[in-house]
Length: 105
Length: 357
Image 1 (cartoon, helix red, strand yellow):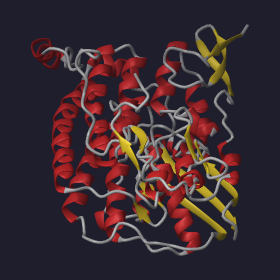
Image 2 (cartoon, each protein chain N blue to C red):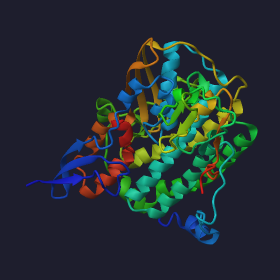
Image 3 (tube, rainbow over the protein chains, first blue to last red):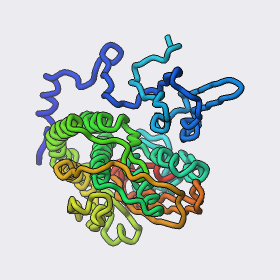
């Protein structure tokens, strides 16, 4: 009969301190290549609409006439990066979670 | 006189909503009626509305725990329908990600089992190790849960030398931590009191009721679809992990040993990783019928495809492992004591979102 089998780990954890971070003050940086947020470089976009056609969750809307518009609903986005692969001008990219949108506070 | 006690859909041991109406005589369960349908999302129907390339990302969202394996099975089916050859490096990368998923799923299940019998510390320790695997997945694919790295004809991302080193370092740590935690799970007196001889499923009953995965292997059935050699498993030679007792303890043992087996598999896959392209380009639309089977952490998944030559599938049917395990789970619960019901259910590792899609 074996009891207290976890004793060694418990003692080690008492000495080593917590395994978690103090979240709002200490944040884990994203790995390079993490699909955090979708960003666009509007100056390069030609409004071809390929990204909107590939999007599985209909989060993108692109119009050419009467006005050129690229619209993105970030609450619909599932971060699959299908649009990034489809973009012929490479103006879309996946940014880390911490990066802000241009109009974001 | 018997009493009916509703177990779930909201219950502390259940990670997902499923209801079991337990008919009790004193503390003994005499019969049980399952009620499902709380998380039905109609994904099979949505798959018929989107085109088959978009479906790759949709199908991945059937389940959060075996998401990569769902997208892998789906891609394998479409590749079979359209006769697309997959480059060898992509096959190996698929195995690596699939096995990472198996490790994180099993660590999650072991942690939940520890939580179900009230061993909070063990639960936290398992999940601490699991976090390393989640980091390995985020480092290599860009997503912690939804890897989205499998695509029709191959994979979307490569694993470079730095990422390979990171994954192998994490695996080394996980192996060290899980080896000592498994000792508690296998040998501790209080753990054995809650699992040995509880929820017994005989080999015959497991076969007759179509149990799959660790549930079947814990009852002595040698059933592991990886043996059939899909993806790169043919070159990696799998030895299925089998226990014979059929109780909660045996099923837990299967998971504990499979974590170790998966770590070994990933190391061998990295050692043998060939150099080739990642993706085969393709044209056209799927037509005809195909059936694909794949071994997920919870057992064997079955996909049925019917394409009609357009860019939308005519029918997609998914039979998930938990769906096959529910009859076996009901047999286990019968004639057990009420406090053991939670442990028995978690020992099957039910994934209700998979079941209801």
